[in-house]
Length: 198
Image (cartoon, rainbow, N blue to C red):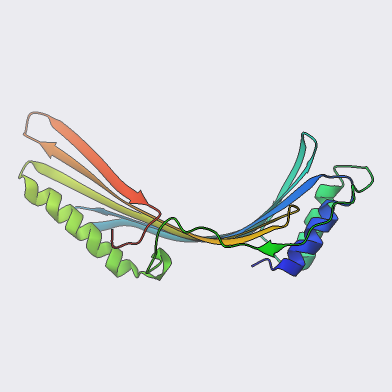
């Protein structure tokens, strides 16, 4: 995580050559996806995204850079590179980063990253079972479960310093039916930024 001390140093470097605004966006995100077809797991994937994006503005000009090396030295190096996009005297912008609470759009009792895949597979088994039992004409039932938990820190030269946790998940279903003469399929999905209990 980019703490206030490091963020302040980085933002000051960004403003050193005449920029009128600078912003840091830090994230670490764990993503997961599982696909089941006719009660068999067809694919499963887990990945982690981690990095920092820095945006430096001057009037209508923008310099942007990204790094997955999130130590102080690397961030200051990136800030220096972005600041070199401009060649003016600093504008004397003063700021103090102050933490403000981010309003919560939903209550999360258990984040997706903390739910074992075995539990997610049970949702898919129930989904595929319901499709297959609906009619003997259902010849293929595909269920998918994807989720991500994203931790975010935003800091900018207006003095904003915020942390947020975003928890997204989605379950999808595809049913393929055949009467021996023709085939049809239907699909639906449900998801959002909410607790898995939904």
